[in-house]
Length: 229
Image (cartoon, rainbow, N blue to C red):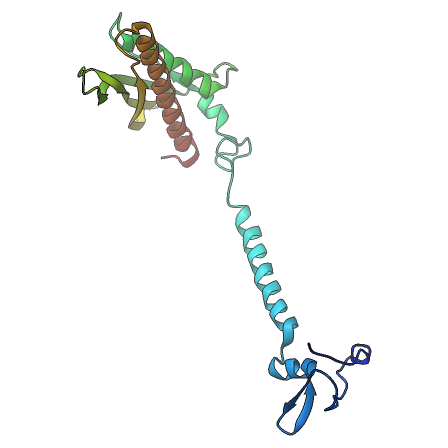
């Protein structure tokens, strides 16, 4: 254990070491204490290292402060684009009825996707005077994922919806956004004897897929109104 004279802390410098004191080491023909040896080997001391760490930390904080003003919430009400938030622009989109074959499962999904979009765009507060029209086309598909090796019947199926959409500016009649999106969800078929459970699983998969389609289209429209492309 190193030993030093406590008076050295009061004076601000280490006191002279004596060769017969504990913790003394010989540096050449000179007797020094452990405290003096530490200062001789590391002139900058711990203070210099702490200073460098503080400088690096301050640089990181300063950089974070400079870049913080570059980010805005997508659905904020004080967007710098156009001087207003994206919410009113989304609320002014008229979602046209989705054309699907009557009496089919896809017809119900067309209503669900449209209702989800209207609520997502307006927040349930009602639409504004329309400035754009959104047209959507849907197609559904099913794929067997897991098949029982004994009965050759599917145990797990994958249900999917493919959607094509177009956003038209009503003032110019120009199509400003054209895109495609899809959703894939899986559901279990709990045995051929439980027909109601299988039908309920399919309906739940359809609802989940429809919600994904609506969310994807809403996000794409918000991106257009913010970035203009």
